[in-house]
Amino acid sequence: MVTRFRSSTATPRLEREAAVRQGHIARLAFQVLGKDRAIAFLNTEHAALGGRPLDLATLSDEGRNSVEAELGRMAYATPVSSRD
Image (cartoon, rainbow, N blue to C red; front, top):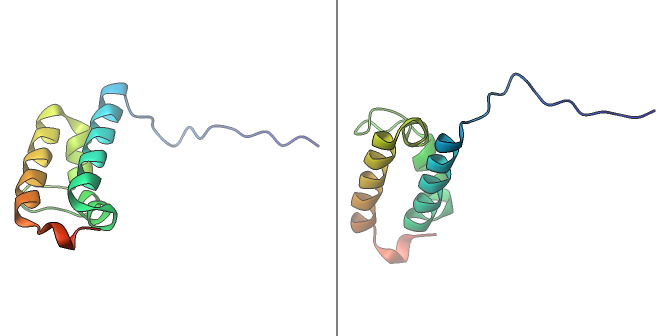
């Protein structure tokens, strides 16, 4: 008996530009915040940004720019010794 895997049609695929923005912001967050803090930041509602940073950055260039700016503010507010 052969088991065949089917692709899930329930999971939408990101457009290329959205995937590039998502990858860029994830790498930047990991560099600035370290693994654990980056994951928490990207996946938690952020009042100042008006949404979940990963969603905002993936949605548009403007969203990515606002998340990058927030990461920049966080980088200067975070002592290097406390990063993961």
